[in-house]
Image 1 (cartoon, rainbow, N blue to C red):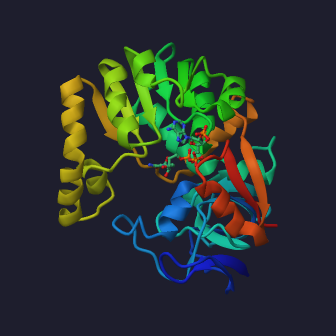
Image 2: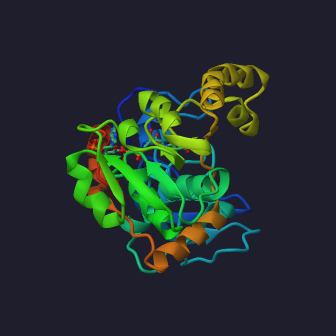
Length: 331
Ligand SMILES: NC(=O)c1ccc[n+]([C@@H]2O[C@H](COP(=O)([O-])OP(=O)(O)OC[C@H]3O[C@@H](n4cnc5c(N)ncnc54)[C@H](OP(=O)(O)O)[C@@H]3O)[C@@H](O)[C@H]2O)c1
């Protein structure tokens, strides 16, 4: 099968001809019709995930898939050959920029019936991250006010729609280039971050979803009401993350030191802070499928690239200006 691989960190992407992936007893083999890109793909290529996850080389890139099941392992109970599925494989078992992948059956769901393979492939990573953040650690409630940073990006376009579906009031930041898009997705208050500092406009919010880290994250502590919830997916992970991920005592100690600054800022501002890292989950993808089929969430695609143009798709995403998702049509 054809696949997009790297031979070492920071090396260029290349096409490789590889054997079909092995099929474990709980795995399904999926013929991939479409994959989507996320910033984690170029961060991984550059070796930025080294502390968190070990990978073997040559490494097939790509975290999101949509396709059709072509074979099932002996103990698979949830899927049959011919099922249309979408998902985000666990841990080091990524590699969706390929014609086939073997994926644990717990990591996928039937694909939403009312969308194309390209649209379905745009969802898993951004959908799981945001669904788990909003329904889990943030516990976003109806009528609460949430600030979503970078509303026009891959994460932001999903997050605005999910927050609206949950009945929240949504403020978001974007440049003028994303204004019409976030308005169409239902944002109630739109802040042009190039013209107005968000921290001068927003006060006493119930929640902030930080997708940018750095100064934006630090300033976000000041716009919350007492005990408001700040969830970052772009800041630095802390000790809790390292413990949950089973990274061992040394890395846990290291991440705890890194996380202390955020804990101190949270205490100073009397708010709750959490770093959130998504978990693969076919169950959560089934819930997201229902939201999509009920038209409460629509996939937002900026550009679709052909498989042979995957390197161009990476370059486009890396500009940091995508409006919605960047998708690669594999079949
Ligand atoms: N922890 C996790 O589990 C997890 C999961 C998924 C993603 N992430 C992280 O989340 C981050 C966002 O991912 P993404 O897929 O949304 O990225 P993306 O699609 O590449 O984001 C691009 C968007 O960001 C906007 N943007 C850039 N700077 C901005 C600013 N200062 N204020 C407001 N908007 C700004 C751009 O809008 P303009 O062109 O208008 O500036 C553009 O539309 C990445 O760092 C990614 O690694 C973490």
